[in-house]
Length: 638
Picture 1: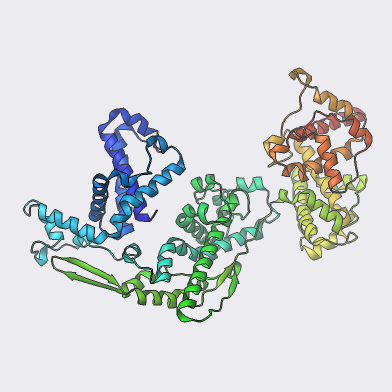
Picture 2: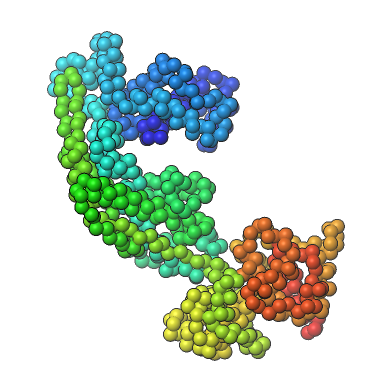
């Protein structure tokens, strides 16, 4: 629907709601169910009336007419509804057939075609005829103001008020669109049709700079859970330099303004899917989680990715259509050039918002005749040429290259670890003494976490670029990553080569997760809850899974199996779908080892591990092994 048609349908709906709330007390309770805001029953009619006034304002803006003329336009539509043959509106359906969204959309289209568009196509003529009827019907002595507005009575200069000009048609883009009835000017038509989206393209540089900023800050450095806990307000307060705060707020306003202009177009035009919950609830204020601004293809970060995708697509589509039309008219091939979106500046875009109205006014002929109102015409050929020369010539196409942030935990995938084993080989185990020295040096869980953050960064680089397994970790950290000073464990730098990197990750990860488990905290953050199901006990009436698991653990070497299960949960279970939750845990683990060429389980383990334990209980199984191991070690030492 066009903006004018949408405003008319909204106004008619709110008219019926105002009438019902004023005249039908029994319907009050049903109407309250339609309102999301907290409204008292006695204030309901006022609530709907305010919405109706807003609709009138929207219709006035969409048509370029005064509010009085917008009200008159509504009367003309209602007149057609009453006078036209109902057969002409066939297909609109009845109440019982309008319960589905698709049926309501069909009704809107039929209503628009039958009653709204015929009136809008002859808008000026219809309004003029209706106004003349009103002027002929009213009495001058009772409606003197009405006659003054339409110059049917003489008005002395002293009584002319600036307010009377608000009843004149205003020169706006909406008015220009309403008067342009011909397709002889395809570029001008296409521009006016896509103008709301094209207006938002001026904000592409600010949004892309914000995405790049968060990519540089958080790529492989931030966990998904942490991103959801930090708010935009927290981030701004963390910026100590005032200039950086102002620059960030400016970029943030680019996102907010562009989102407001085009969010309703995202489901239809953007190639990147944005879940409806983000479209409805996203408010770009200080309480917004930072994860909405971090560019990713899943989760809240998809909002800014889809926004840039839509804006770049709108810019390129418009430029392609303009080049095609200019080629037809001027019989010349326009040279197209492309610029990466990361290099885009304001001069490359259709940055017209502050100049366009003055250009429209310069090609507008406005005349007034006493008693006949104003006459507004536009020089369409000159306006289109000016538009092309000023805003379109020389503008490039944009290459879309959005930096995708990978969260720290997303580094954990079986494929990533397989790449490291292939590109940095051989991968070997650290000795027990070296592992203990590293853990004893770090001591606290926080220090282990900080060291693990650095190891995960190294894993990210090695998985993509590879390396020589014999290179000392100290040299790689110092020369390639420039992060020797921040690396927490000097023992790790002393003992490890790149061939130890997975063993170092395993040592730190397992120890940190053990500490969290024994402290009654969750060791596997941001793991889906379907994989957090508990093990059954004999008292629960099912199989005694905990008892069976304890009997199994008495006959195996605990540490290697615990480490293997941890890697399996982090690199494989984390990425499984909910439909995989009921798979047997042991079978899934063996398939994982076989798929990535890892050493198979010992035959004794395959025979004795409880068959009833499923993937959904993987975390509970790991926790149970940690508790069993602690109890076992206490028995040995004490």
